[in-house]
Image (cartoon, rainbow, N blue to C red):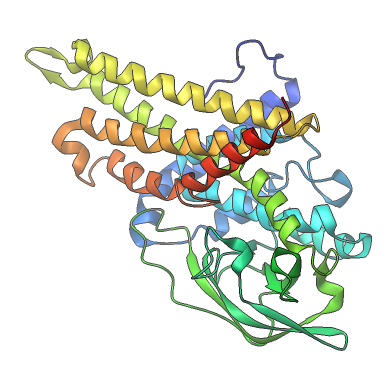
Length: 387
């Protein structure tokens, strides 16, 4: 079970306690029972996401004037952890939807916000964030999708790769090149799913999180009114990087939820499984393994929550977000691997959930910037800082 209050932190407000209780109730009643079969069938949980939107759980940090919850970032991340402990796909979807809405919140005009945010925040419109391309994953500034100005419209041509919600989203937040001026030539555009010329590749055949739809997005002369440009022309890269700082915290919280699920399963199994006439939890070698797993989970949780507090206080948090994403996702990989070891041969079968957790953990070390990129972000921030 996730920890509610960290040592040295202020006690949770009654509002936060009620929010977490609601999230846990939904996770236990709606998410956990559906997860295994939906992952087996690669069935995207659109109806569950609508339910979360109607409950106000897709827009916890967004402004109340547009239908959001107006909450700090830290309790939102704890909700993501609860969802991911029950079903990682749902946690990822909520995080990616928030990522796709971020540019509108940060750089949209009042008119754009009034038109789009109510649907985005209610769960009625699901978003996708379109930055990566097949040749420009970690090197995002090298993207080639073009947006040529034609009067009051942009004509967008190109292809985006590895897009979560590709083909099932209702709108796409697209980074496209409007000039050849490096990262200063990238512009952010809002593209509705029904735009002529917009199509989608077949979903990727992934090793894990199979219910989470990942597909290429193809833009073949898609016309986007200038009124759907988010921010100034050429400001898209800065918007994209700011969004990723917040998104990395979302992935960190998802990773902690998944790791907690694996730890819970391993601990319960160790209590029940008997060898040599006693529970395997009595053997010191296994006790040490569980202790290390639990320590890593708690440390990862503390990292993401501290980074979230910095964000909530208006302090710089890019380095801390990268650290949280790096450590939490490496923790998820380690803990799910060790959970299989606790289960022994049974853990390698699909009869027990730790096999699925293991397959799901790997992608978290890749999305929202690989963990090698996180190390670059941390090191650059360290070496650029004034003592």
